[in-house]
Length: 226
Image (cartoon, rainbow, N blue to C red; front, side, top):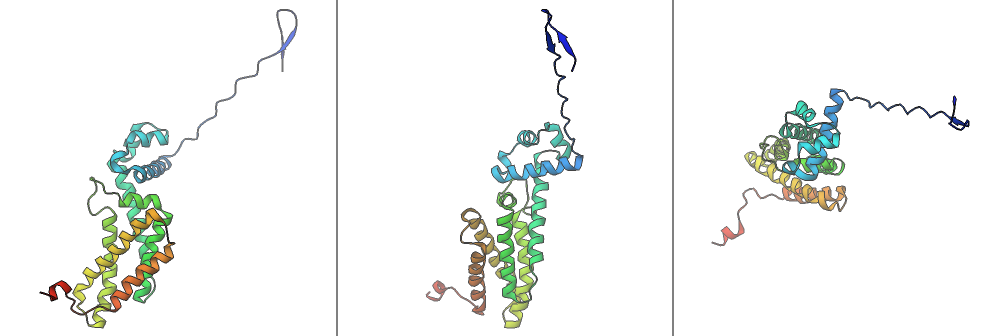
């Protein structure tokens, strides 16, 4: 390092060169989009649609608001992408789980698939169960459960027919079963106990033992007393 002299004839070291600025790695458009989707997913899960703002999404991503608008057109567009991904992820998980041939095992698999999604993808599930005024009934948790109910309906329809029950009632029973599992899942989302295998076992116990002792033409007890 070269030496400089001070005014008194002494020597002093030359000042060190300034540090080189660190260059930020620029994200590709695809990477930025994925980052914004992940941030939006977390914010929508924490606060819901109404309480989430584009300003906060941009701030967390350390970008300007126009960048978010460029990718999604606004908060509604970002929300729609997040919900669509979660809908497909949950439905794929449940559809993939339905592999066994016995109806009781299929009920177990469906219940475990839903509870597993809640356990592993908590933020995604919170997004789905929060209702938003910008989403129709075809793009949220209701639509997923309806799709699952239609699959269960086919299973129950064949089972009803083999047992001499009216197969036209399979739709009613499938909606009831899936609704029971879905509502229990929303409750379990907050309490997280007992463990998911125990919850699934009790759900199937109620559903299967109820189905195995169906009355062909049930009536209400209150109606019988009149």
